Length: 431
Image (cartoon, rainbow, N blue to C red; front, side):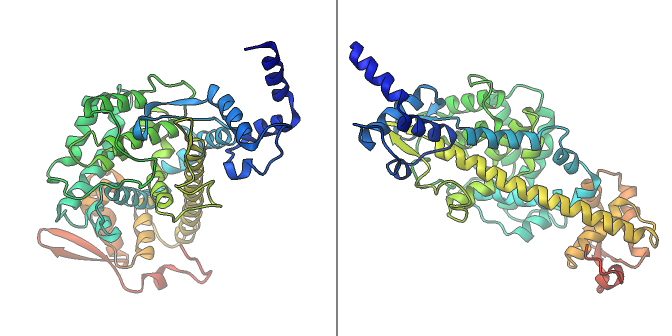
């Protein structure tokens, strides 16, 4: 390179118009349509400036640890907006945060039950299965046993969630992933449905075979071979991508990928993210339900082909925005649940001698007058012994809130008609 070329290049970097382009690109993703409307440096076309800017961005980009569609290298720029979003997510989701303590509060049991049901249904949909919410709720709450293969899969996946804690401090390995798969697949039969795959450049066949893919997934979960500053949310998105583009397991890759993402969050000490419906948000975005201006771009505009490589900066931005959107919803719902429980508890305190488990049953009864409670499901939900669960429900029968009947060899407890009128006082409480 001649001295003149060096001087010209340095002059370009110092040019105020080009500096403005660089500043904007460092702040947040810059689309071609927005870029070409900005002032260009003298003597440079928009296309030329675009190529120079992207060459500079590429030098400091984060490279994806695998090749994407058609074997192309993928990368993204860690813009200030991306970093701000990830910092916000970490602050709200780390161990000991308000949200973490709220999810562990006995006031939020009902919220967590519903969150688990929703998450389990979303996992099934990743594998092309469509199970109704109420049917899933009945199975997961122990109101009836699984009757079809998808319900067996649902229950297996739900049980596997509770087993993740024992894997948290152990290294993730392909063998561990296979162990989780076997838990999920037991008794579920063969997968005949087609797994959900995004119809865009973000998805496609990957050149990894099953063994290599599982090894890379395990390394991502362990944080090996990646920048130490790489955020767990983005590693989890890479885990989902690998599962759904290589299908390394014989079946149920969607359900297992959801579990491995949760394991990654637990290992990263961001436990709240395991309760945030991230997969649901991704599916809503992929289906066009969530779209601009709620997020930066639609699926079609979330990746950019540059010099035979793919710039995923917009895609990463969207992923952080989706996580924040759902995190806001979770936080808002938790605050409403806790406030409602406090008001409900205060209202009942002077009149009824009930414990927090019975209070949860009454709240669920108000929300769903058709609910059916069983001793075993109540025991599992609150992690108490059978005698305590039985005493809780029979106590509510004695107070006139529930009715008890024997169905086959088990007792079922149903809500007494008119329970809202019995519980809602003159102050107009609406738990």
